[in-house]
Amino acid sequence: MNVAELLGLPDLDGDLDRVDVALRAAVATEDAFLGEVGVHLIRAGGKRFRPALVLAAGAACGSAGTDEVVQGGVACELMHLGSLYHDDVMDDADTRRGVPSANAKWGNLVAIVAGDFLLGKASEIATDLGGDVSRVLARTLVRMCEGQVLELQTAFSVQRTEDQYLRSIAGKTAALMSAACRIGGLVAGATAEQVAGLTAFGDAFGSTFQVYDDIADLVRTEEQLGKPAGHDLVEGVYTLAVLHALADGEVGPELHDLLGGPIDSAGRDKALGLVRSTDAVAKAIACGRRLADEAAASLEPLPNTPVRQALATLGHRLLGAVE
Image (tube, rainbow, N blue to C red; front, side):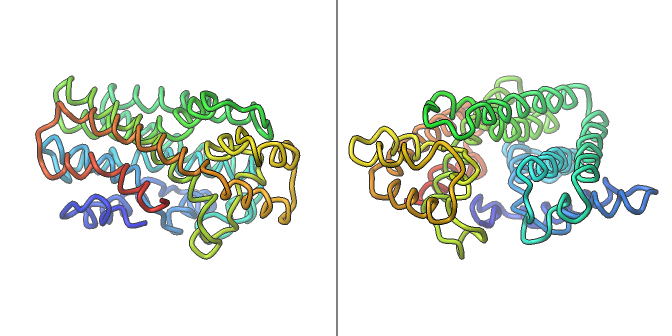
């Protein structure tokens, strides 16, 4: 997924290059070992979706590519990366972004400390950008933890509800995307109404993005994903389409008996087949499209520019890729 192509914004590639340079500078430290661990996932690349949202939000408010907007993008990406180090420890992951995960390479304790280091660096940059930005990231970290705990509480639960799923992704994923959009508006000097609109957009789009990502895990191939399909099923994270399939009168009982605990690759493949045999994916996409509509409507306070138009259609274009 190329974020610059999705947004269609001129200069976005160049500004994201500036973010990458600033990311490496932000984690530079006198301790060579900590510096190596801290830069590990930065070197591995990534979509840079969150800094792209900061840049787009700033551009939508008339501040395209300023140093403050770039630093806001760096702060959001560092918080995202710090959370990935911690996620990989919880998941006992072996790889991340096509390279060995930090925990696989250096052990869980080092990975946890490195994640904390990146979160600290994000907070340091946010403080330099002002109290409002610092408060946004602090509150965001709380929301991310709340969302993660909600997911852990329903792991392997075939009774998980759609409301529990939506509340979890609102914290786990949407919170940081909302923060990225809010920070872009704040550092651009946007009006209070515009900042509120960007914040609401980020919340709705962030949930749209997670719905899209969860559907992709169910419908795409291992070659397309770069990892086996159905990873969430194996981890016991039953996402929206799976919940709809569990409620299906025909395949629901069989899927119910199959899930609810650890499964092997054969069980995963059978579960994928059952989910795909229903209209569950279509129902999940419909939910995602409702969220995408909410995101687009939230942008009403912003000037009607090509940047706003690109943001307004972003959720629908993502979902189109898994239909």
